[in-house]
Length: 83
Image 1 (cartoon, helix red, strand yellow):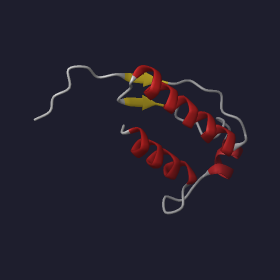
Image 2 (image 1 turned 60 degrees about the vertical axis):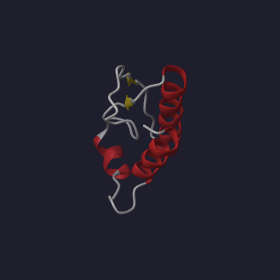
Image 3 (image 1 turned 45 degrees about the vertical axis):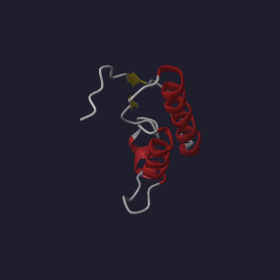
Image 4 (image 1 turned 90 degrees about the horizontal axis):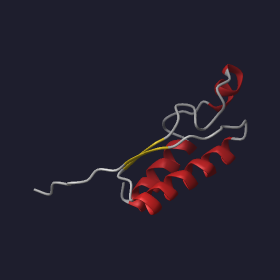
């Protein structure tokens, strides 16, 4: 059994814009930086990191689970960074 003695959790803050692609790119940069700089095991993003906290914009940016740009980016990044 492999037990970790240290667990590093990183909390990220970011200002989301109306441009989802820019938000995803910024989130990817923050996650990568947290892992590369601090050796984070888990990285937490804001609740509305891929769109601003705006009802109209959020409705526009809603994704279907079977075809989601956001989850695809997060899954691929988590695999590549081993987190």
